[in-house]
Picture 1 (spheres, rainbow, N blue to C red):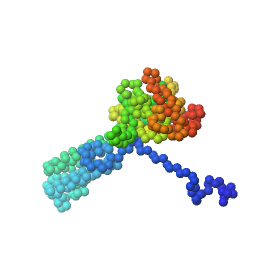
Picture 2: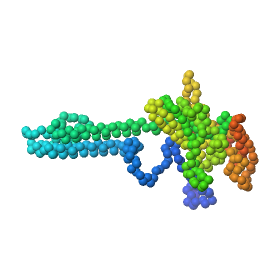
Picture 3: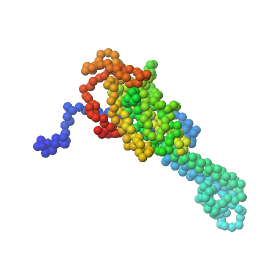
Picture 4: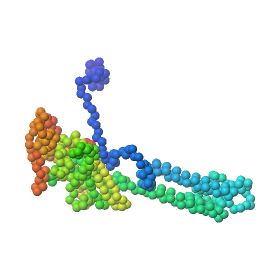
Length: 411
């Protein structure tokens, strides 16, 4: 009634009856990643029957555990060793008769194996003093019992082994390679745009630390679901993607952010890709950066991936390196920014048979054969495509050049 009188806008009035004439929109299903943006592999290992293989390499198993599990294991190791040797010291004192003489009162008698040891509590305290070499001075071993001397040596060796394993695990966990990879960053989106007359897939990588990554190299892989000629389904078909690197050996000098490029030629797995495929494509491009940490000498690896919807068509990265006061300055606030660039008119459909296939075209589809060069002279490849006109036009095509910041756009 308030809406009828104009007191409350109609869109703020609760509707008790659902309007069935309005179409329902279903949320778009999120695609499953093989490699997360932070480099973690999205693979769950289940139904492992041979669990004993993990105990054959105990040190690696301990390093791979979480911190709370390591602390619990080391604490229980010390407590168990202290209690075990405390029981042994108590049995030695009991067999030698030191406990009976301590209960009868102080007086002249034979020399005990361990002085001032008259109960299990005192034996436990003496065990801690022996293993951690505290030595308060109230209890000490004598030369009366050879068995006590043997137990003393054994407890010292066991304590050193536990300390060595604990210190080694702590050092390896604090200096793991993926810790250094936290400061190796990749652009949030990849782009496809012409570069030097060739159509290229590009992404940006950078290092936030001043200490360099020695012998750094980058590999690209495309992961997709495919099937063989015999009908075998490959859920994770990994295809190597060649990188356009002018440096021999594939190494890069990562002292400033670099743009990694892959030329989309006829032998490229991205060759039949078009702008429309980026919205419905089911593939993933994995970027792997490997190198040796300059300060520690440990090999590190950083990973990321780009889904088809995270690849921007017709955009390139903006420059981030400039000269200021006689030195080069890197502006990481523009690390993932992109700018729109003109693209060839046609898509990557060879005579309309790449996606539509041979046969009659659907109604409303105007096919026109267009040829364009995406490679420079000498390595020219002419690609025919069937350009499809849509009733919807991109509003950004008629505007001036716009810059896209990761997650938002600004004119």
